[in-house]
Image (cartoon, rainbow, N blue to C red):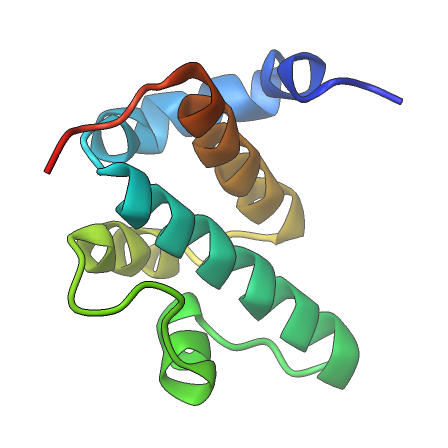
Length: 108
């Protein structure tokens, strides 16, 4: 099985970094957790029901993992605006997890 680092170092995540990188790097740790959770919940719901929802719709339906308003909403809106496919969505979630693991996040 590939390690997370192996998954991150590929053309897909490099393209994602070009597209979303600076926005993702400026998130706090709770924001990164919120965005990753929302992406993965949207994907799981889509696989289960066959109905694709945006990340914003998924949060409205299932609620937020992190209490209160986070600045992750801006990134979620940006991701939703690009209507990413499953591979892109997984790449973003993996990049967020990798950044958390490496301690790359803004401090509140």
